Image (cartoon, rainbow, N blue to C red; front, side, top):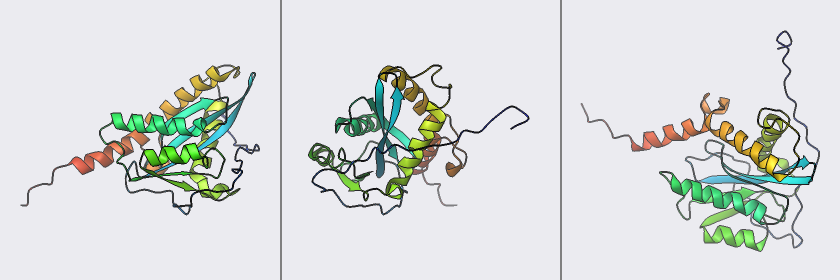
Length: 220
């Protein structure tokens, strides 16, 4: 890499974004750090991270399906209210509904950290109306939502700290949305993932569904 004038990117992290709800009440941890699923639409994890812009901080929230670690919904906002984490779930449910296999009521676990947005009454009621079970990790332990910590780190390293998806400084919310949209599209549709056998996330899900739909061969 040195001979080619290339340099690897390094991850850094230092700002706390998880603030415990005032009443301290929350759902239990249904995953116990097991970020695997037998099929899509069984377990989603959510979290958000921050982006500095000239106009102030912007928060970007993601919803990730753990089966192929695919980002199924995201939302950028200058507000840290409950809608920040609810909107990616709404988008994900809508997007999955447009695909061949939508989310079945009662089959999905939505996991998050113990931030006040994810322990709010609005968020919990929204999951209940959609037939999804809430799951929340312990306070101050990144390992309880390790998959999302990894995705957030990749987002900052591959999207925010390069000029691939945005050529200039982040001036306002619109700049963050533009860069995030480009990165999510690349991350799901073109980036090869070693944990998926060097397939894209979309390819990995497609192969899963093709195996389900494949007609059994007649006995010889």
